Length: 75
Image 1 (tube, rainbow, N blue to C red):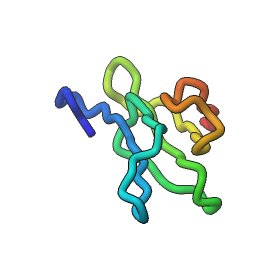
Image 2: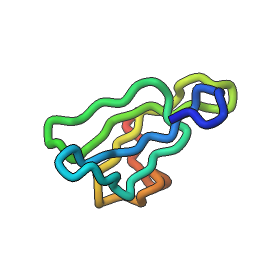
Image 3: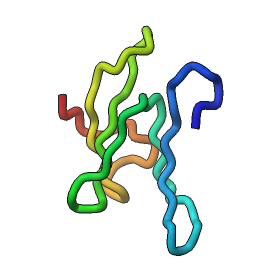
Image 4: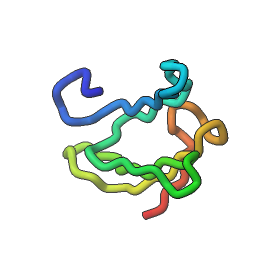
């Protein structure tokens, strides 16, 4: 979801069986997000102050802070 039109997204995860959203909300994400093969890990890019993707991060559902503040920087 892009609330401000600046192409910085808040990424939410939804359980398709129940329709409920998980507590995980990743902020300042850019266009790229992919599931890893374990179905519990999201790889996504985050933008810098100029709006360019500058980090690739790894977020494990239920294992990191729900706001993504302690996600592992992969690249």
